[in-house]
Image (cartoon, rainbow over all chains, first blue to last red; front, side):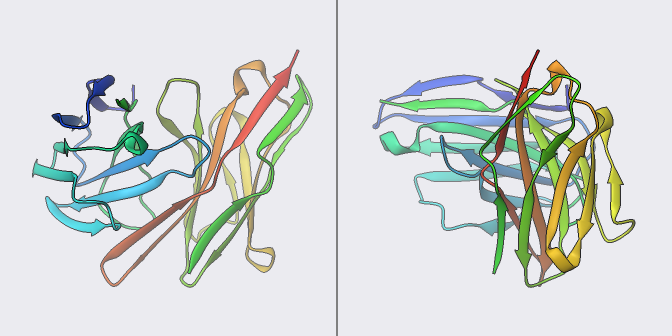
Length: 114
Length: 115
């Protein structure tokens, strides 16, 4: 266990549904991240929060909406997704945002959009 | 611009023989470099990191990597492979400039260990 938990572990949703992914870290970190891991593609950094402030949005479509109510919790709200959004979504945390801080990853949520 | 190239998508070694996973990077800024491992159906786990200190970095489970600036490489090695090393390995470059963090993952190398 890395101290980063994600729920649910698996999610199947239709294109018209609205769902949320949850991430919680128990490490006392101040930065949290969302990544997308698709088959045969490198991990893509989606969002970065540092001390609850969003510092990165790497051209992610608006159908993905992050929320960080405090330094321990991170959500990814999903609505009107497309089949190509099916992937493993990984959450990570680090002491703070910065190049030298290693990230601790959760186990991921396997999302299937039908 | 920032990029990471993992030169081999698959590497197969016999148990007890050395492991070499290759990684080359490019970055406009002084980078930090990481190797992560991902076992099936599990999240990523940090193996080791380089952050401008010693160029030879030792990590967990007997892995080590050497930062070679002149060759822009950060290859991962282990003297003797164990069955439990079978997994996917990711080389990562991270920079922080102007308040923005940029993290770039390689495409991964799947390590197969043959008994």
